[in-house]
Every structure is written in structure tokens, then in C-alpha cells.
Amino acid sequence: RMETIGKIKHRNLVPLLGYCKVGEERLLVYEYMKYGSLEDVLHDQKKSGIKLNWATRRKIAIGAARGLAFLHHNCIPHIIHRDMKSSNVLLDENLEARVSDFGMARLMSAMDTHLSVSTLAGTPGYVPPEYYQSFRCSAKGDVYSYGVVMLELLTGKRPTDSADFGDNNLVGWVKQHAELKITDVFHPELMKEDPSLEIELLQHLKVACACLDDRSWRRPTMIQVMTMFKEIQA
Image (cartoon, rainbow, N blue to C red):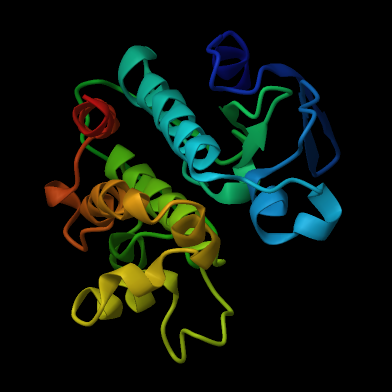
């Protein structure tokens, strides 16, 4: 599996340079990325020293989508990441998104719709609801996790542990606001940056919510997500 992944080259994937196994430890070696993870840049600005405007956040969202779409649709066999999250989106010297960490990844035949696995993979806050109901993983699970990353870019909030959420997580909190005043979910600095961005932010939130449909079969593919972005920019 690592040999297959190591051969993949794409501008929105972090190159896997090597791997080794020492006892029970498995180590993956990746190319160094100047700005570290999206998680750090978004949620620990004191550490990163970087402030992301909307244009950069949009570029990161599109880059991460492009990387996932390549794994799902262009690789033979197809690759399911299984642990898509903001800490696994690294940023290069141009703040271009690079999807990383293929330690949980699985190869899947183009003829299959899902894989049955023995253990649950993923990170709380990013795991799609169907993974808790069955030990089946699919590309649509990655789509859900990607939708959570999009919400992080739009809201500036982590997927879990916010005082705003109560018993909810970020996904539940956003869906709750959809019934109230949806624009309240956007990061205040994005709205201050340019009030005219509201329509574009709502369009991107609509893409995120499509990815976060509780019913996996109703979620778009990552190719369809890329098409949605192109339609917004047209």
C-alpha cells in the first residue's frame, strides 16, 4: 500500500519520501512543508503568525478538494484517505494546500463502492455518521470529513470543544444556525474584511453542507465539489 502511495505525484498531495517499520512503530517520511498544518494556522495564530484572508482560505479549500479528487478518481486503484482533517492539510511556501498522512489510507477497486474494515478510523468531529453504524468506509466518508474542514475555514472554529456548541459539535452547531441566522456562523474577521463577501461565503457554505449530508449517497463526489467551485467562480 505505501509503495503504491509513494509513487503518486500531485501538486496538492504531500510527497511521501519513505516509510519504515520498527517493531510495532510505523513511520512515514514526508517532504517538509514551510507553514505546517492548516490546523495550526487557523487555530493557533500566535504560533503560526499567519492571518488567512478569504481569498487564501478559498484557495486552500480548492487545493485540498483537488488533492482528494485525485486520490478518489485518478489513482488506480482508488485511494480512500480515511483521516481527512485540518491537521492533515499542510501548507507549502505559497500557502497551497497539500493533503498528507496516508497512514490510515486504503486502496479500493474502481468496481467497489465501499470497503469493510475491522477498526474505526478517523478523528472525532470529522468521522461521518455511517462509520459509527457500520465498519464500512468509502470515498463519501472522505467527502464528509472534507466538509468539516471547509466549516473550519468558514467559521474559524475547531470541530469539537467550543463553548459555543453546547452538547453539539461544529457540524451540529452550523446546521442549528441554518434554521436561525446562518451568517452568524462565519468568522467575524471575514465579514469585516469585505461585507460584500457574504454571498460568496454562503455559496461555499452550501458546498460544505452538501458534503455533510447525513446520508452518504446524497453527498457529492470530490469531482462534483470541484465543479461546484468552478460554478461559483464563473
